[in-house]
Length: 566
Image 1: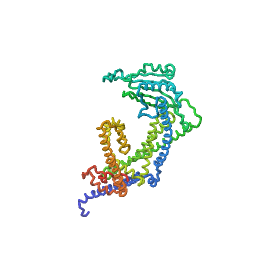
Image 2: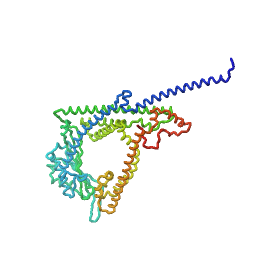
Image 3: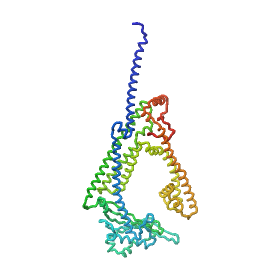
Image 4: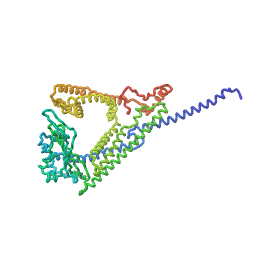
């Protein structure tokens, strides 16, 4: 047998095990490399623009085609609805103006602030109330429009609100008031007010014996019917309206000045019996068919964008699992967010609003709904989002992408800056309201104060704001000067300049990145095939060497302007 060491007999199995381990390791590495190459190809294809995807795999960019088609259809739909809505708004406004001239005595066509007219004597109040009653019973002979009484409810309702009881003696500064409010109403039919109850009888009615120191307000309400015939000119079915009118004589202040308010709320209803000779019905059908195509287009867009988001989430999980398995490290949140395309979310919201708005528009066209305001809100916002979404495709060109990248870089800093500036703004708002409110009409309520200060920041109406402050109190007048000068100096010269500087700084950073290259993340390095860098960091990031788990991306975190998407 020869001289053969006994120890070699025991070492032979060890050599075979090492060979098997090396063979298994090489097979795992080869499989891992194939998986990495496949993942790189999928990631590169996912982050391509539509033109690059078409050149790479001859895949038709259906989302791009749908978005272009949707822009045309949604904009056309909005224009058609806007023209129709404009007729509705003009009919309501013109009827409201006509009612003011018909029912408010002495109305000149110009409202005083938020009310129509004021009365200062008891005689003027009585004349104004009976003027409404006389005009209401003669509405058929006075009005130029298609106005008539409501069939079932023709009565005119007059209600007065007053304190339960009381007595006031200003001469010796004494009063006694029971603050309980009593409401008493009187119903007058048009026929009764014209024949059975002449004006003298109404004046002698105990209901009109008003005790003005107790009187809070008098409210006259009535309903009228009308038909909007102007829609025939644009080949639409006419609408039938019910006008709920209220005339309020407000004496809550008991200051000797009684304000007269007029409010008209119009509701649209189906016309019960109608017949039109012509092709209006066919035009309505064509419009409904067009709205159906808009809904179908938005539904396809919604499905495609939702599918893209679902595939992106799956690809993100696949990428994260590969990194954890191959390099024993987790993908940072910045790289995870790159898979979620915010433009798709905007398109999905736009599609949902367009679908709901189109359904409501079809119901309005069929006279089953009258929610013009809600439909306008949905269609208007959806069209805004559709046009904003066009920026996504312009962003594929470097020269057009500056706006998007600048907004993305400056948004976090601008948001933090606005939070700090907003605290100062709110402080000035509350201070101006409580101090200058009694002396300046622009500071009477918080909403008006906020609007006034915002206009001052933009340099609007400065002199008028200074000049309109009443000089009844020297202390308040001096404070107003200090208040306005300090506000405009602080916000115009400092805060607004810093705000612009933040955006300018982000713009310069973007230009620098476009010239010298954007910061690289783990995702970008992997797409470029720089696996050596990952292998170098893999040893340092392994749990055995106690590397911090927070280490994530290769780029420096000292620069807050780092942009993720090149």
